[in-house]
Each structure stands twice: as structure tokens, then as C-alpha cells.
Length: 162
Image (tube, rainbow, N blue to C red; front, side, top):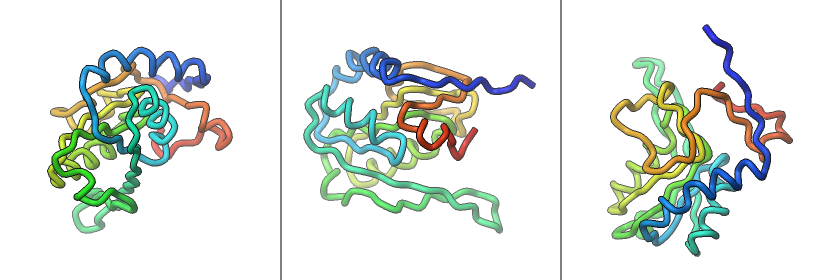
């Protein structure tokens, strides 16, 4: 089995990725953006600024294993109230769709609140996704590599999912 290649991205690389997806993402209008912590905060702020989205909210979701069923259930540590989402077009932003759990669960939660979610990530890993029937609405690049964004360098490029 091949070892996963680590790619260290520069701020310029991130800017180019965002530039490449803005034309597709801007084909729609959004009432607000939800950025997924921690990875989605920086690209979410940049994308919201470029699209003129003034309302940017935060979602924090973690997963805990159920010892009896071995399923991982989402726990929302922070999420906007349903009243902010009902009847609105919501852009959900994260840095990467690795297994897809965060984006899928945030999107489902937005739908349950009566909103219409659109998801955008910088990188998409379909080979690792837990959701064969779902994918991000927009992504800059498909990859099999371990992407290390400039905002992660201070932490040594450590992620919870290799």
C-alpha cells in the first residue's frame, strides 16, 4: 500500500484554490455562511468576503463512538438556531471533505431547520468518503494526499484524520 503523500500548502496555494471555485459558487446567492470549525474558519471567511456574504456563523461538530453499535454519532458543540436558517440559502464551508461526516451532518441539520444547504470545500477525497451517494456541491480539487494548510503549520500540520 502506498504511503500517503503530505502536501504543505502556502497561502498563495489557498488563494488559487479559492479563486478556482468562486466562479462556480457565485452562480448562486446565499443568505449566510456556516463555517465548520476549525478547518473551515479561514477559507470560510475568505469565501464569504469574496461573495459579499455578511452573516457568517459557526458550526462545531464532533463524533463519539457508541460502544454498543460501533457507530459514530455527531455531537454539535455549537450550531446556529433554526430561526437563522429557516427559508435561507446557506453556504457551508470546510477545508476538506475527507470522510465527509462534518459537512454531511451540518448539511442535514440545515435541512432539518428548513434551510437550503450548499457545501464547498477546498479538497475532496472521494476514496475516503463514508458517503458514496453524496459529495460536496463545490470543491477546488480532488486528492488522495494529506493536505496541510498554512493555518495548520503552527500545530505541526497535525490532523485528527490522516
